[in-house]
Image (cartoon, rainbow, N blue to C red; front, top):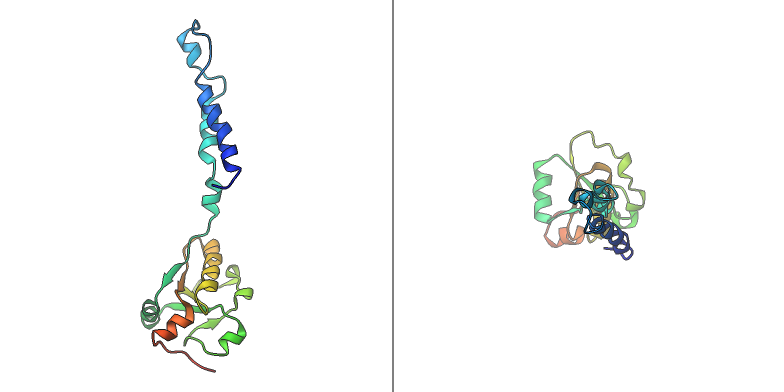
Amino acid sequence: MRPGRAALLFPSALLLALSGCGGDPGESKSKRDAPSIPLGFELAFAGTAGEAEVASAPAAPVPLTPTELAAKIKAGNVRLIDVRTDEEVAQGIIPGAEHIALDRFDPAKLDLSDGREVVLYCRSGRRSAIAGEKLAAVTGQAAEHLEGGILAWEAAGQPVEKP
């Protein structure tokens, strides 16, 4: 919880607790049990604290090992996107991958209508995880990326095309 969130939650919890209190001991039971403020309001307010943060958080990218990615590529129906820089791609690319550098990667502009599963990769996995978060924010579904990037792919003995 971020600092300041407790301050927002405390007054609502206090109001909720105090809403059931009150009155003289000599008042009738029905009058004492009636809260001065509608109880549903406090409950509704208390229940929403922090929900906006949870709902807006993009799904964490799903990491794939080089072996898992190789199997997906072999099975077909994969759209592999390399999010490295132009200079990095010039050193080699996974066969069949398309290149969209992270600084130009706009998942809202991707045509996802062909039904292929998108898998992202970069050099080490950090930038593809960032791209995966962006893609998940647009699609509402977790995106997959190559864990360890092309470095792990090459270390696993998987093929790389050199220009």
